[in-house]
Amino acid sequence: MAAVLRGSLCLVGRCWKHVDIACVFTRSMASKTQVGFVGLGNMGNPMAKNLLKHGYPVIATDVFPETCKEVQELGAQIVDNPAEVAEKADRIITMLPSSPNVIDVYTGPNGILKKVKKGSLLIDSSTIDPSVSKEMATAAENLGAVFMDAPVSGGVGAASSGKLTFMVGGAEEEFTAAKELLSCMGANVVYCGQVGTGQAAKICNNMLLAIGMIGTSETMNLGIRLGLDPKLLAKILNMSSGRCWSSDTYNPVPGVMEGVPSGNNYQGGFGTQLMAKDLGLAQNTATNTRTPVPLGSLAHQIYRMMCARGYANKDFSSVFQFLREEEGQ
Image 1 (cartoon, helix red, strand yellow):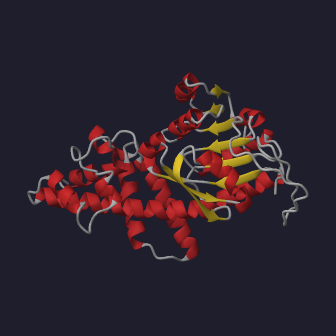
Image 2 (spheres, rainbow, N blue to C red):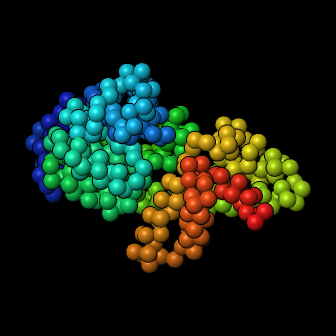
Image 3 (cartoon, rainbow, N blue to C red):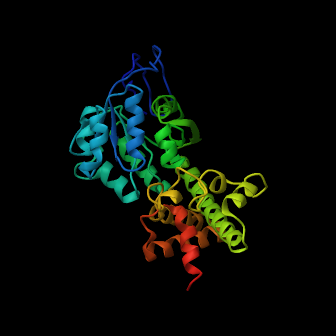
């Protein structure tokens, strides 16, 4: 594995299979060297802001330059492409929408791996196919860099408050260095195993999240049609055995909770199109492993249908609105 200390005060000698330490000095846990950040969308923007708040100089880029304005005003240096980020920083975090985006950002003509330094730590927080994470890890390793997958859970609210959960896959000896950065953006940083296991955990989580959101939406809709006040029903659910994240933290019914997408015409949050993508990843892995996921399959169908009917850019909790509209057809 790579043997360069990223912005720390120690020198560590390694071989490919074993860690052969000739002389060890303590790796600095407070090294505020430059951190690269690629992808400043709904999740990446607040994540980069939290790095800045913790005193890390950030070098950032996004395919849409207008998304860089906020972090630039807070002190981030903006460059034109991922390769330029890799030229200036040896610790880089990426937060991108899909597997093709990750492949392009890392291996494209202006990708990170065109200019990556030996010993660089590359952390991808996108939610993608585990096999793509493994491909990127191999490509990075061939250039003397370290790649780790670290997808997140918690949504935009947790990204803004620095309370994300990171599910990390990669070389265990690199986890401490990754955790130093990820702890600035999350309340929980969990090591899952080798490269790809972070993605596996995230895919499983999001399949359950989609199923739970659909179930909560169906339940709330049924209760409303039976004459129950939605706030009262939510209160009862949340003190009963039906309680779940979709009912008590991210309720899909407008007016039940403040500060969630359902109270803002389902704007912001986690897009329906992205949920459909994640459910597609779950379906692919379920097929490859011959795992029966009947509810996951149905959830995938529902979110794909929503995308086809104009909900693609709305938050995934808009499945409640989708079900209400289906009543009239």
